[in-house]
Length: 347
Image (cartoon, rainbow, N blue to C red; front, top):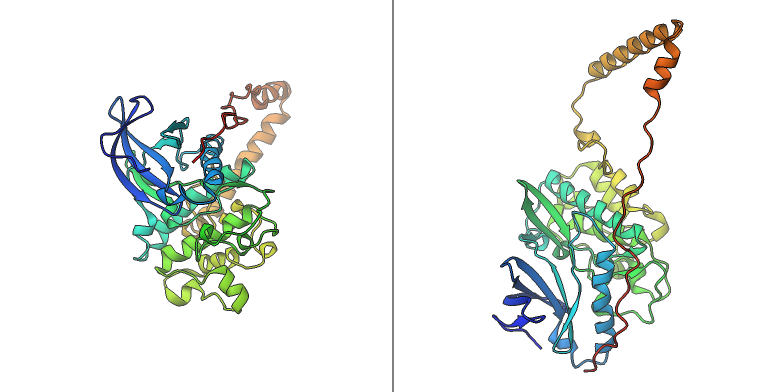
C-alpha cells in the first residue's frame, strides 16, 4: 500500500510530501511534521505485502527502529518511535538532506575524501558493534553525505538487516545479499559472524569509492577461485597502505581479516575518536622538529626534578598533580527498549 502526496499519517502528525525511493525491502517517503520540518517515513515495499514472508518482514522491520535507538552517534541516522498506518508499521526517521555515495561512486573520489567518509562510517559501526549488532548491509547506497556546520559528513542509514552477532539464520536469502559488498559468511547459514563481517563490506565500499568499479562478489571468488583485483591495479594513484588495507579487509577467511573495525581503521592509519585528525601519512613534522620537542621535554623534566628536591615543595607538587575526582557517569538513553507486545496485523 503506497502512500500518496498530502496524505496524513499518525493522526495528522506527519504529511506525506513525495516518495523518495524504493529498495529491495522498503519504501522511503519525505514527509513534514506539524512544524514543517522534514522527516523520512519508511515502510515496507509493496512487493512484500503479498509474499509468504510478509509477517517475518513486518517483525524485522519494526525491530529496526529499536535497534537504531540503541545506536547513538552523529554519523548514524536517528529514528523515532514507530507507528502503524493502515496495518503497516512505519518508522519516522531523521531526514538526511544530501546524496548517497552510490550516486558519486561511478566517478573515483580523491583518496583524502574517501578516507574522510570511511573514517566516519567506521566509527559509527564501532558504536553499532558495541551494542552487539551487525549492520550487514554496508554499501555506498546506504551512506548519505550531507553538509552540516560547513563540513561534509557521512551518515549510515538503513538498518533493516541488522542482526545480533549470534543470530542464526534459518536459511540464506540471495535477495538479502549486496553483490560485491556482502562478506562470504553472510552466504552461509551456520558461519560465524562478527565485526569483521562489516569490515569486509566497508573495505569493499572503499574499493568502489577509489576505483569506480564493483569488486567481484565474495561468493564468486570463493566458489570459482577468482582472485580479487587489487584496487591499485585499477587506480594507480591509490597509496600502498590503503591498497593493502582494502585487500586485508576483503579477505575471504574471516579470521584473516582485522577482527574489529578500529583494527581495520588502524591499517588505514585513521586515528580513533579523540585522537589527532591528521593521519600519520600526512604528518608534515620533520625529524628536526621532533628533536626540538624532545629537547624541550628533557629540560622541563630537569626543572621539575630540581624543584622537587627543595624541602617543602613536595606536598605542593603532590596536590598539584593529584587527579581530579571522577564525575558520576551521565545517564544514557534506555538501551533495553524492546518492541511492543501488540501482535502485528495480519495481511
